[in-house]
Length: 179
Image 1 (cartoon, rainbow, N blue to C red):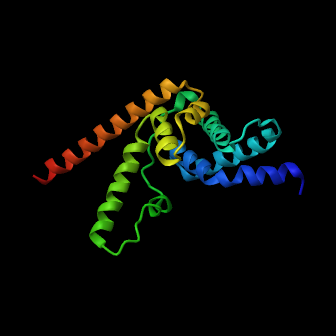
Image 2 (tube, rainbow, N blue to C red):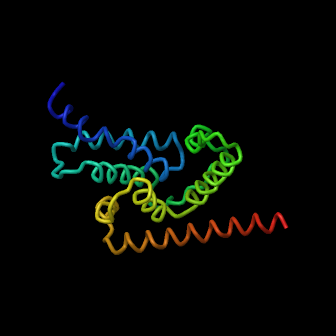
């Protein structure tokens, strides 16, 4: 095994889960996300000799993001949600707690959150995933998205507010349906 491959595997492959997570949230399809990550890993490997940083994670996630936009095309940013949901994706939100009621509520809330996030514009969804799920700093998110830090902060605030608003609308809708 050559030195480049060994370094790439040691530095980039530990972030494969983060790459998959971002791709799934952006593409909203497991099959498309797998294709995006595969292309991103190939591009990252080809360009690895040119990487001049200390943290591969933001660099790799930027490549994943670019691959998504290349695949989807900037005009087709809001892809409609598929009617059939992949049960494999939903299984990731099943809690192993022994309390069936808590389990049912947590699973239902997880599904609702997934649907609400999936319906958000890509710009909002990507900053939420990168900050809240991947725990990246504003600076790292700015680097990945190519947006100024102020724009990242604004998008994140707007995304959180939109998610909260839609969540409360969902709760109010259920409350009205019960009455």
